[in-house]
Length: 117
Length: 114
Image 1: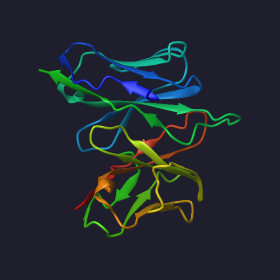
Image 2: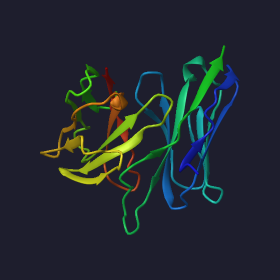
Image 3: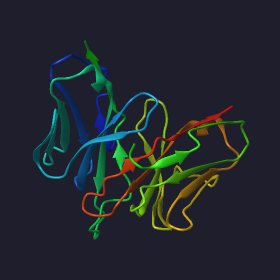
């Protein structure tokens, strides 16, 4: 089982609709969760971070976390063609006895999203 | 622009040559990370520094790879005797330690080994 799993897509969504991206992770000790957007040939760009169960909204983006189900999602409302990119889910785990984040992020393979005008 | 810079942005080299990449993190960030990303995959962790101390290394980091951060500011990643399998995007990220430890990525260095 991969540590962080995402549907690779491609996921096609009409412009103006809601895009829903999903991610599951294997380590129950994981504490911090991130969504990065990556355009072709570019580096990952942070979109959202979430640390506690529930929803977190930032503009058109909503991250959802369910630690019991080991599941994190990203919703993009009013999808725009500029949202077409690969979305990477990343998980950061607290080491035992540490008060800080782990030394690394573990990434999924990413979901390629295409917004159709 | 996150404030993390990497040089060079592109590097083409012949198999067997040595290459060195540089990363300058966000100035107040004392944690620095190196990742490698190949086509169709997410970034994979290579190594991590807190100040000048290298605290963790992935098993992906063979003995041909070495990373330094001599004064706790910029970092270099050297690959000796490059192989075609080393062709990838090499990403640097930095963070300020705390409960969130959010990592911000530089633009990356794309390495092509011929």
